Length: 201
Image 1: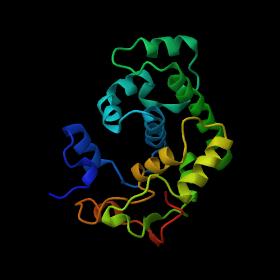
Image 2: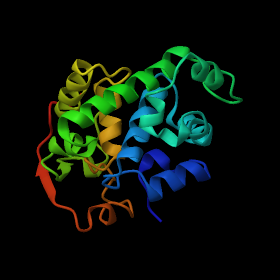
Image 3: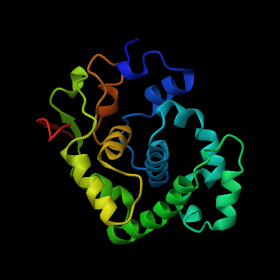
């Protein structure tokens, strides 16, 4: 079975993540928040570590219930920091809480985070020229624009590269390689838009 090159020799959790979640067009807001915060927590670390510690993150952040996380205070930060196996970064933990509050404000403005996110692609799954061959950038024009907008709204740890990874994970951009068995299945029933390369770097 052919898979994307980045997960070719991964462990079982990473393979399951690729096979079942990565690149699937996502519209569940709790899961959208989870994926966004996994990207924020990942900054400077490996994605494999994020997947390995995912259960710990769920236990620490009420399964990424953004309404609950937005109400966290100092005691919660201490609880999370003292959780076995958790990242020992007060800054990142505080950022998740802060981002949950920003997430709620954004939902109020747009009616839902889903409407905000997919509004950037007019509800379409984007296919950029060359990406299907594995020629995938670290960031592009779209992720740069979204990152700037999120920063303006107060979000932390979400730069253009991090946001690009998020758009891949949420399926707004389909970056499965064409020889990967998931390439076509994640687009089934979706409105797809083909685009040229986009200020990539």
